[in-house]
Image (cartoon, rainbow, N blue to C red):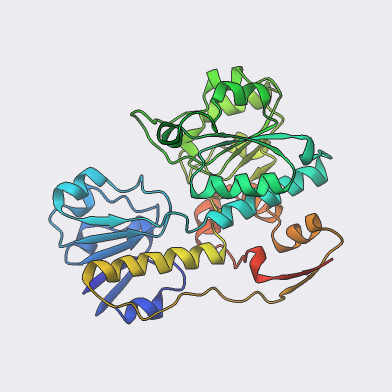
Length: 346
């Protein structure tokens, strides 16, 4: 079996070599029809567009994306071509929750806000949004949730429409997949009309997909003080990001909210297990992230401890200083462990 692997997928080398006879690594943007033609499988990230242009005439039978999102895979073409694909739902949910919680801690510290007196609206309550909901409730926040696919299955009682969120929320955070059309369209879900309806000058957070928020509408909302702040991890047109939004956002990072070592290890494990299942191979590996250099955290408060473990300011400062290095900052992202890897002493 021959497998082409994105060269930024961590913790994969030893395990994949125990599965495949031939493994070739390439940058995600460098997957070409010539490269993949005689391969049996691909293990990719979001930078590889798996469509007819790449796959037609190839021997590819299976694609695993080590990501939650899969809008970079032409699922219709894969179905027609008999190519099975999988993603890694929930792999980095805890990592995104860590990013959101640390960002909220920063807001509380630097902006002197009281989170326990605030209402947060969560748009998209799947694997990631559900963890944000649990975290926010532990912080004492009032929580409103919006998820149309879940609402259609479960009934309206537990859910809130966007109009109500616009009236009542102090923070609105987006965790939807990207759907460009259809019943559950999320492309430009937050557009000019949405921002015009906001009543409480909320903080806007986006860690889903850049296209879920219309960039110019967000900039207008910042300029017109319809929103208080923006925390942006995902961008329209990545890696060519809007420099004005970069400058104005409170936190601006290079699509790394889900990039904890724990989340990456989960995604690699899930991708390899799916590969083994598809080709009838018994998995004989376990992917684990590296231990942090220091596991003991001495802190004056939980807020302080969380920011010692992960402070998104360092990622934001790096991107604001060198936006041209977006892909490098993302691709060479350093080790970041989640709270469970540490012992906190207060």
